[in-house]
Amino acid sequence: MSLSDEQVAKVKDGNFNVEVVFHYKGDTWVTLQREAIKKRTKELGMNITGIHYPDFDPETQSNVLQTVAQKDNVDGVFSIPVDTAATVDAYREVSEAGKKLVFMDNIPDGFKHPSDYAGLVAADNRAMGTISGRMMETLVDSGKIIVIKFDVPFYVVDEREKGFTNVLKSNDNYELKEYGFTDSGKVLSLAQNALTANPDAAGLWAPWVSPPGAQAIQALNEQNMDIPVTSCDLGTRSAVLLAEDTPLKGVGSQQPFQQGITEVNMMAHALIGNETSPYVGVPSPAVAEQNLLEMYPKILRKEPPEEVTKHFE
Image (cartoon, rainbow, N blue to C red; front, side, top):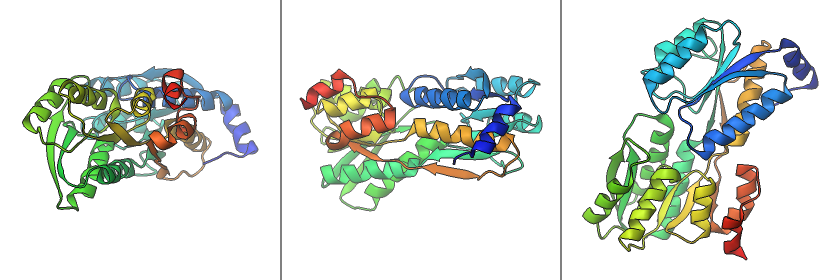
């Protein structure tokens, strides 16, 4: 989704104000989205008047959204719902206040395009899970696969899990053992218990690497278990784990920077009155040790650090 020179000029003349309401603050995806949104809005003369991080708390996110809805100087809002049901009323207030809504990865329950929101830009999270499932198939012929799942309703992660499990459930050679978490920073003990209960496990999957996947790998190392791990998202931590030849063997990745640029372009079209698509998908590439040095700068928009490159020298 691009803008013509004439459209860019029209956006700049509008002197629009926007706010960003994320789900939480703590990963590379958020950092790259924020960098992209800041970069592209600056290029288009749009002003960011606030960036918010509700830490996966739907009540906090709803309160933030209700406050934003009441601001007269905000024209548009970028956001990813923490809970698609619990935040509906708050997003409805934003929409009814006349502010354009561009969603990241998911939309609130019951929202209709174009009356309620301008559009959705999303990574293909189902494909990310499918990629990590197919990677596991190439690494493990059969056996128990431990699935570390996020036990909070969250569409993005649910899609990854469906993609992964659908691949392996289609093959009778695999037995999936699921263990759920609600706090992404407290997966170590869960993983330790899962591995203790399944000492014959042949593989392990986590919905993202940092921190749940990384903590699962820590548990594997502590128990001297040498089984492959696949997951989703490429960030600095996952890149180091791939480069070091740890149990992490591959991920299906998002492209958060490109996603952020696309979101701003969509918002720009909406603010100047152009029609917008209800959904724009950003492709999800596969990343393993073999193509890590090639994919790192494409996805993370910078050269890999020495802690990654030293393993290829």
